[in-house]
Length: 314
Ligand code: ASP
Image (tube, rainbow, N blue to C red; front, side, top):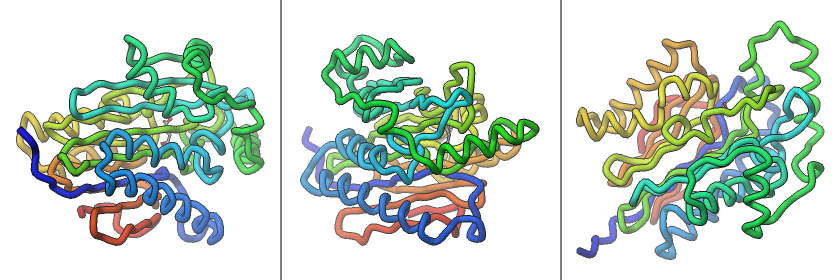
């Protein structure tokens, strides 16, 4: 049966974090907001042309990975040892196919590697050197360590190493990126990409690469991309539970989102998420002072923000 065109929705985030209107420099905020607009333009153009939600979230995240303002691809945070290890995941709500990579160091667009895992391997999650080898074998663009490194992220590492008394997730500087979309045929998809937490060590992997924790998409319920203190998102399986509550308990996307952000706060977790439903509703929630986010719809103005209402439905 052919579905009737229902319009399209694209929501993106550029990370939740401890920035406040007082601490976030105006030029830094403007650079990040401009990056979000560029990602909405790229993903929105794809959806407007009748493209699939999967392609739209992939291209939106790709644009943000190349933007040094964000903690994903170029501009990723440094590990304790001074390396950059990226995590990314993508999921297609049509058939719940998914792909992810963790700890990749040489793939210019980690989201492309995640997609290649989904489409060209029998696996869901590949890690570290093996994941980089797979991505090179697949002909994906490789980049040297210098491509990913920025002075601002190096300074953040130095600051954190000078304060070993701080909790490990004080390294949660904003910048993880994600996208969720519903396309004109009513299918949904989600994608997330990150350098993780500043000064992470021992091969630490966050929620972004874990299907069900930081990334999930299911045509029966919606698509979700998270950002924040990854360990809490893993423990709560936030992205999957949000969709499961809708599917199994019949909650609205908003009710499920409220429940999850309350649980996150109760466990001491920090961060937020964006979600879309197969009907094209979009929402965001965050319990940090800010979260970079953006929304575009067919026939509407694209909007971007960082502070303001932590509970949003559109
Ligand atoms: N959730 C990411 C992680 O824990 C970090 C972030 O969103 O800033 O790796």
